[in-house]
Length: 290
Length: 239
Image (cartoon, rainbow over the protein chains, first blue to last red):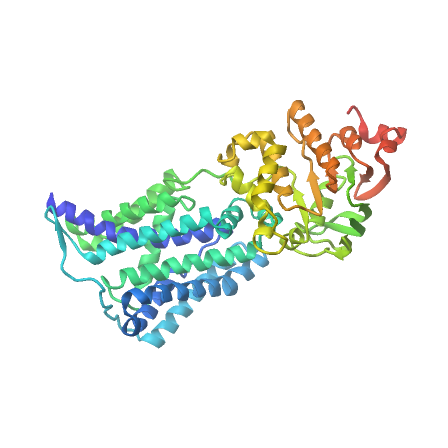
C-alpha cells in the first residue's frame, strides 16, 4: 500500500506539469481556436534561459525574468506563426507554422546551450519529507504548488481585471468583443503570451527534477496535448484531473507492469476518450455549423 | 451626427449594398425598414466595422470611420447592439455591462463615472438588477436583449445602432423594448434602428429609409411614410 501511495504521489507531481502545459493549450484555444504546437520548446527555452540566469540571480529571482521571457516568446509565435494564418483564413496554416517555429527554437537552443542535457540546481534540499511512509521531495511539492498557483493567478486575472474580462469576452464571441472596442487581435497575442509564459514557468519547475536540454519539452508537450484532449480543451478543471490521471497512470504502469509501457496507458486513455467523448471528459458538446 | 455617402458593402464576391446615402442627425431616431435580405443588417455591420465597406464614406461627427476595424469604430463612439444580442454567456450581467465601457476603462474614451452608469442601466432595465451576478447565458431572451442594449449604452455612445431589438421576443417584451427606445429618445440618444416591426419602428422614429435590394427606395419623415399607401402596401403588410 505504501508503494502504491508513493507511486501516486510521484505521479501527481508529473501530472501537474502536464496540467500546467495543457492549461497553456487551453488559453490560446479559447481566444483563437488555435494551439501553439511549440509549447514544449517554449518550456525548454524557459528552462534553459532560467539555467543561464540562476548563477546570477538565484532560483527565486530568476522566475519573474523567465516569466517575462516566456511572455515575449509567446508574442513572437503569435505574430510570426498564427496571425498571418488567421489573416488569410487558413484553417490549418497555424499548425505547420507553430511546429516550424518550435523546431527553429529547438535548433537555436541546441546552438546556444549545446545538445547535452544539463543538470539544473535545485533551490530546495534533496531530502524527502516522509508522510505516512510516503517520501515526497520538496521540489515535487513546489511543482504542485507552483502549477496550481499559476493557474489560479491566470483565473484571477481573467475574472477580476478588465483585460482578463476582455480575454473571456473574446473567447465567448470574438465579433461581439470587437464591438465593445476590444482589439481582439491583441487579446489573441496576449493569450499566446500567457500560454508560453505558463510553459516557460513549467520548465523551471520541472527542470530541477529532470535534466535541462533543448528536447526536454517535446515529450512533455505531447503528453500535455493528450491531457488537454482528455480533460477537454475548454475546461480548466479538466486539465488538472486529466493531468493527474495521466501522471498517476504512468507511474503505476511503470512500476507494476514495465517502465517500457509507461507511456501506453495515457495513449489508450486518449483513444478511449476520443472514441466515446470527443469533447473531453469535462468538455461541453459543441455542434460545428458548416 | 452620422452621414453615410455612397456606401457599397457585401460578403465575398457578393455585393449587398449598392451605394446607400443617408443621415442620422444628432439626437434623432432614424429607422431602416425593408424586407428580409434588403440589406438592413449588412448596413449595420458595415457601419460598425464588422465588415469592411468596399467604397463610400461613413462620417461620424465629421470624421470618416469607413474601413476602421470594429474596435476602432467603438472608440469613436459608435455602439452597435447586434442582431441576435450576442451577450457574453460565461460572464456575469455586471461584467457584460462593464465590458460595454471597455474604451472608457482603457483610456480611449472619456472615463466618467462607470459605476454610476451601470446603476443607471439597472434603473432603465430593472430586471437586470436582480440578476446582476448571474451569468448572461442563463438569462431569458428578453433579458439578454435588455443586457445587449444596456451594454451598448455603457459606451456613452455618440450614436447607438439597434439591430432587430425585438426579434424573437414575446409581444409584452416587444412593448417593453419600444418603451425603452422611446425613453432613450427623450434623453436625446442618437439612434439608428433596424426593425422587423416596421409600424412600431415608424411610430418611434423621426425619419425613415426604406431599403430594397441594397438601395434606398423611399425616404421621408417617419410619420409621413407610415401613411404612404405605396410604402404601406409593399412593406408594412399586416403589421
